[in-house]
Length: 349
Image (cartoon, rainbow, N blue to C red; front, top):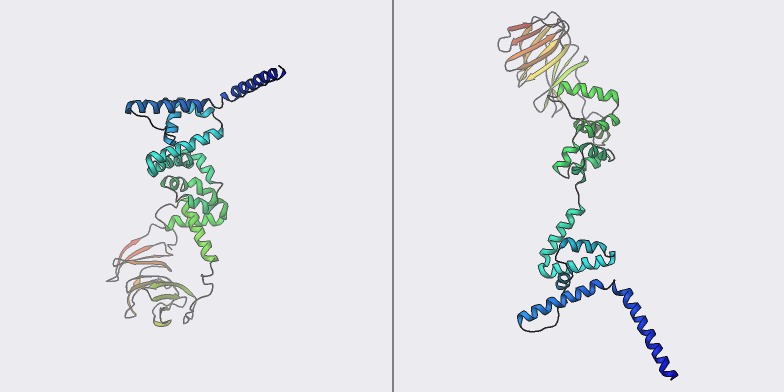
């Protein structure tokens, strides 16, 4: 009797333990049961329609299809309630199902969709002011790299508000003022702040580069006075003038004096060249026209009452300005003065 009572008690205790275990694990295995029931029900329905029975499929595609509710939103809601580990398992099963059904094409499509979430064009999405503020934390090299990302990024990077603080920070104020004032007269358009930074950077780089010669390559001697002006003639010649009124034509290729142009009685202050014709202005108040091929003076243009400080020759005309505040226009062919412009009140240089 004692043995029978012990057997009954042992059986009761085992039943209680099994009931407790089943209750604690019922929630964690709920989706597995649903998955199994749906999977088997779907397989049974298919078998009845086909009129035969077969072993239930356990492929990844079938597993995911069986676990999915009809409503995608409901599935997503259920998915968000799962643990991270279970979500990872579901994602692996979904990827395997896509690969089995669609092959590499399906995986590539999935990759593109995931890639679009991971790579966000934050600079394009931000307001312009915030995008500019982000770029201020980058060094200049990195900012230039950003300009190569896309047209949208380049438009933001090239804004004056990006480069003006960099120019003001890196430039000496006096140097900056000189650069701005000079470029206004040299260039037909206003420089952007980025272009100003590039100009400064190139200048510094060239001066610091060991390839820049700090000593003259050639020294041309021959002038007895101070050289006051020079200009290139073609690709291999230089025309220079000095305080004694002499003009020298020097060949750069042979480094030799080609010839001298004599005629001015005082120092030469300005030169210009058009093809093989040159003009010079002097303290002797004259302008001379020269033939550089024959090394001869063609005309002596008289009319200024003071030192000629600037000359220009173009399209058969010579323009000269002097300390007498006058500008004169001359005919190269005849040497005649065509016009005298006297509106200036001070020296024309």
